[in-house]
Length: 226
Image 1 (cartoon, one colour):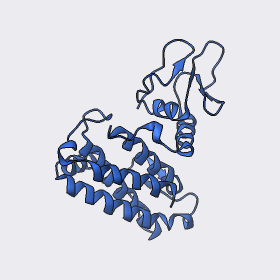
Image 2 (spheres, rainbow, N blue to C red):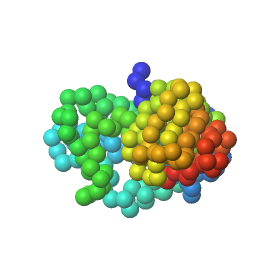
Image 3 (cartoon, helix red, strand yellow):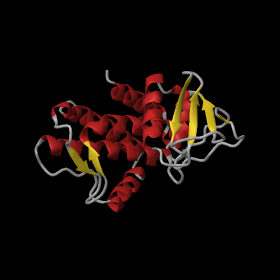
Image 4 (spheres, rainbow, N blue to C red):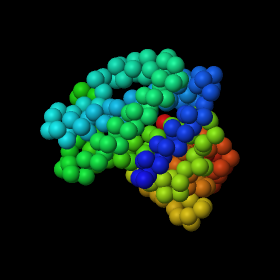
């Protein structure tokens, strides 16, 4: 079982455990219920699978028709019964897994647009993209699975992904359970050193609240953008 398949199995197990009356409850995503988050994950899998299938077939590839359409589709699916969302998530995840088998044979520069004339995404970046979507949003559900439950390797990959694309004020991130320090930007003496477990640091870099799991050399934890 691949890393994505294992993460997806954990997500679906959580969705299966939720009672119907628990789906409307709030999540870490402002304005989104559990139904919204799970609807998003289903539609994200469908969009990625569709774009990858088009690339494999040698056709023009697009993930979403527009940002407006994407948002509207999430709202529409989130309003459906829990069983409908659950089935859509399972079907979409299976479709995504099947299409992913063909990705290794795509050229290294194969890419698709997220929306028309929008962000261009490399096909070979999709595995990590989808893994991040599944693991982060699973923790967002507040349904018994949190960032501390991420496999160590996954937490490291998510942390390094966000370290690489960080463009905020300089700081250092010291991973206490790995005894490893990452430099974000070009930190100098006096810039914050944020310390804590790898999973908490990865969660924080997404713009989410790690509670008391992290400490800062300045006494104040810098805020991250989501």
